[in-house]
Each structure stands twice: as C-alpha cells, then as structure tokens.
View 1: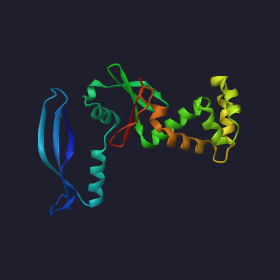
View 2 (view 1 turned 90 degrees about the vertical axis):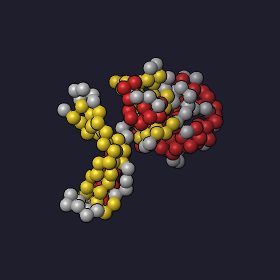
View 3 (view 1 turned 30 degrees about the vertical axis):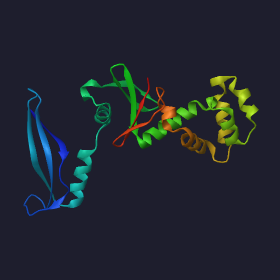
View 4 (view 1 turned 180 degrees about the horizontal axis):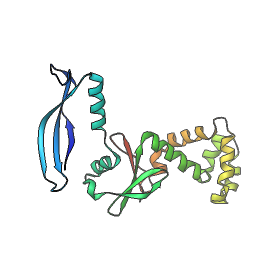
Length: 202
C-alpha cells in the first residue's frame, strides 16, 4: 500500500484553464510505501478545484499541524521520539520526550486548562491579591489559608460573590501572571508553535 502525504503547499490559489477545475494550487508531495517505508518525492503536483473557496479550505486543512507535529517541530525532534501519555494536565494532552513532559493545546484549550488550575488552587493566591479582588480584609484570607486546600471551596465562594465573579478573577490572574504561571510547573513559561501553546510540566 502507498500513502500520499502533502508536505508543503507551494502556491496560492490561481486561475487556470483545465477540465479538472478552474482554480489550482501546487504542492511538494511525498509518497510512502507502508511495507518498505520507501519514499518517492514529487516536487510539483497540482491540485484542481472548482472554486477559490475550496482551494483555500484545502490549503488550510493541509497546512494545519496536529499537536504531536507541532510539539516535535518546537522541540526539533522527530515525531517518533514523542510518546502520548494516557493522562492529561488540566485537560491538556501530555506528551513525553525522554524524561521530559509537555502539555499542549489550542488557545481555547489553554484558557480552559488555566481556568481549571486556578479553580483548584484559589486558596493559594496571595492574600493581598484576593483581598483586592473581593474588597475584603487581607486577614480573612490569611486565616483561611492556614487550612490550605481545605479552604479552597470557601475562598471560591467569596470570589464568586464579587462583582465580576470567578470568570473576572481568572481574567485578572492570567493578566497578572500569564497562563504559563498556572500551566507550566517546570519554568512557568508559555511557548507557541503554530496554533498551539506548549508548557513543560516536569
């Protein structure tokens, strides 16, 4: 069996005179044999479409990287060196490369993951930040934080009673520290590759 894989789109949609379609794009292609792993390169294959919209949709689909491809590109390694883990990190997919682990997701997924992390660790925010957001005395949170995780539900209730609620708290927290602070337990950094955001977690 031979599998065709588009490697790189090399032209924008352009009008042509062809019985195959009125719009065309060119791509560098590679054919791979599943049995022998032998490869054949075809640097100038042409794809035809009956509308410019379809051609653009095709380009968007082919140029969109999956998460493993994006992470491999970011780390400058081969995809075969990555292993997808069965667990997630606040909902983000986790991949390991040797003894290092990375969480990766789209912008929307990263927002949700950061929100979940903040929800689980509201008790650990410093008292002045909590007091400023809720308009309550710092002493309230200092006393509650002595109970550590056991005070989390109570802290969340106070946050939710504030004018902008929990969603507003999440926005302020991310604005102040960035998503990497909540999602990267290794260095607190957020990295970007294509449409994905990457966080080292160990």
